[in-house]
Length: 99
Ligand code: SF4
Image 1 (cartoon, rainbow, N blue to C red):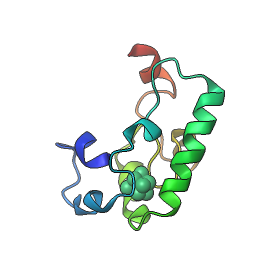
Image 2: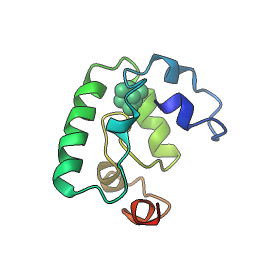
Image 3: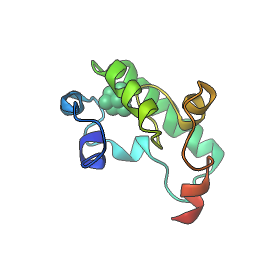
Image 4: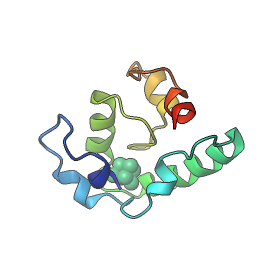
């Protein structure tokens, strides 16, 4: 999932992406436009399970935090990254409304 989404980003050490347990599961890690809160909770709970079995969770989480990523990465939602002090570039929800 992440490897396709991140071509051209700042980090040069992205080899871990090839080992992600989420490959082919992009729909679980990024919201659709106008996703309802209950659907988001279900989607993110499933994504969290996938991340829990992933061997590259640590570098994935670090990457997402450093690059202010949207979506679910490294066992963390956007809200959780934000709460941990890794702010999104735009406020939460802006991207979903714009698409
Ligand atoms: S930790 Fe989660 S989002 Fe990151 S590569 Fe693994 S499965 Fe994908």
